[in-house]
Every structure is written in structure tokens, then in C-alpha cells.
Length: 385
Ligand SMILES: [Zn+2]
Image (spheres, rainbow, N blue to C red):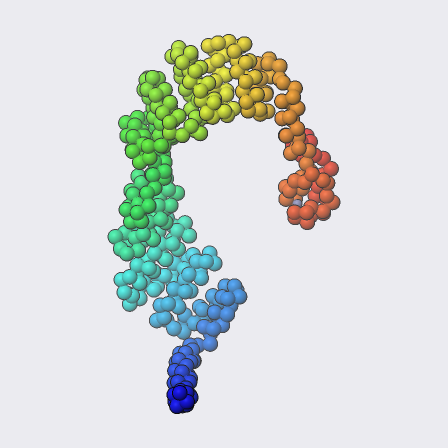
């Protein structure tokens, strides 16, 4: 027992000595490498850490001049230029790195992507597109596609955007049905505006194939059918929106009501729109319903529709419709509505920052400006100034 303990005591210092030696070797290595670095690197690093990019750039520019072959340094510098908004310098630096030609193909692709992002930041879209397209089919494709897609969307090049979004779906595995359907709708709307019904019809179908819940496609599809003299088909298109997304019914309620009235089918539209009003009780659906009810059933029916609507969902807009049609507004509802709205209108508003407050302040609690509150309530400011 005793013997074993002594034996351990003898061995322990050896382990300590070995650990100490190993640590010394590592530290010596690090110190040797650090000594090889010019002190200017540390100055630049220090300035970057303290977010003085201006002076950090100056130091790095000096360094880069001294060490022309240092690619990493050139890239760091180009990145700094772009962050500071000096895109022309970023472009020149990236182009120089590429021109030196000593890069492996993967490193070259990375620099090409950076150069494309410089061009994008500089608004040179054609050149950005050229560089990004060079990365298609390379390992960097997944990173090149998103900027390429936003570039095409910004330039309203919808066919190219669709092609790029499809490729992005393939590369990333994430479906993008909403975007692609909207791009097709843009194609359809543009063709519709230029009386190219064949292209518009095909684009509407493509939008629905991309996203069968795309309400905008049916909205445009109905407008196309109406122009081609087929109101029944137009109504069928618009009515599909109820199953797609009832929230969007306010966008077609007026079209449905007016088209049905024009072809003498008002009675059916009354029932349809009353049903929509239950699902989407908005002022636009109410207005559409009101027009068909007035035309088909007359003033008395319109007044009771409005009374019902105001009771179900009181709003100033609904009450104002009620007043227009000679309906007596319910005083209790009116008082409640006015109370809700006047609370907002009775506030004071800072002229410097727009902050609203219930009390009057000599110094704004939001922006600290002095004497920035006129001694008038918001409603008086809106109406009389
Ligand atoms: Zn203020």
C-alpha cells in the first residue's frame, strides 16, 4: 500500500514537466508566428475592433502596397471598401486579385461573387448579372442565385426571375410558390395592359399551376374573360376566390356585383354578396352589396342591410353610408363609435417628431424638443391647419 503511493509521488513531477514543456512549445510557436507579422496588422485590427473603419482602411492600404502578393489582405481591404460604400475601390481591388491569376478555381469563384456584389451595390446591374451568371453550375451557385433573383425582380424581368426562382428551388429544396405565381401574375398583368390576351391567359394558367391559391391570378383571369365578352366566365373566375382565400373577397366584390347587375343577374348577386359580407364584413363588400340591393330590392331593403351591418360591425364608414341613405343612425352605437375615435383625436402631437400624448408637454418626452407641442388637439390640427 505504502509503496504504491510513493511510486506515484515519484512519477507526478515527470507529468508536470511534460505538460509544461508541451505548453512552452505551443506558446513559442504562436509567439514566433506573431513576431513575423508586421505591427501594422495589429494596428488595423485594433482600429477595426474599435470600429474606426476609416483609419483601419488607411493602415490596410499602406500594408497592401507593401505586400502586393497577399491575396487575403487584398480581399479584406476590398470588403472594407464595400462596407464603407466605396464601391469603385472595392471593384478595382477585386478585379486586381482576379487579374493576378494565381488563384485556385474555388477561390476565384468566391472573388467573382464578391465582385458581383460590388457591382450590385454600385447599381451596375448588367455587370452584376454577368458575374453572377458565371457562377451558375459551380459550387457557389446557391449563393449566386438569391442576388440574381432580386436583380431580375428589381428590373421587372419576370421570365428570368421565374427561371431563377425555379433553379433556386432545385438547389435549396425550398419551394417558392407564392413568389413564382406573383411573377406570372406580373407577366399576365403586363400582357393584359398591352391587349395581348393570349400571353395573359397562358400566364394566368401558369400562376395557378405554381400556386393554386393565387387569388390575383383569378382576379386577372376574370378581367380577361370580361374583356373578351364572356361575363359568365368572368364571374366564375372571381367566385373561385372565395375558396382560395375569403380575406381577398373585398378585392372582387364590386366587380362581381357590377358585372352581375350589367347582365341582369342582380338577384343571384344579392344572395352571393350577402354571403360574402358574412365572411368578410368590410366596407368594400358592404358597398358592393349595397349597390346590388339598391338596384334589385330598393331603398327600404338597403336601409335594413345598413342597419344590420352597422349593428354587426360598427364603423364610422358604415354609419356614414347609413346617413347617406336616410337611415336613422342608432344613437348608442354612434356615441360608442365617436368615443373610440375621439380618444385618438383628442391627443396633442409633437411638431418635431410626431409623438402623440394625452397631456400637453413643454418638453417632448420622446425627442426632448422644447415648446414643440401646439396647444391644439390632433383633430383641430388636421382640420384647420
Ligand atoms: Zn417630439
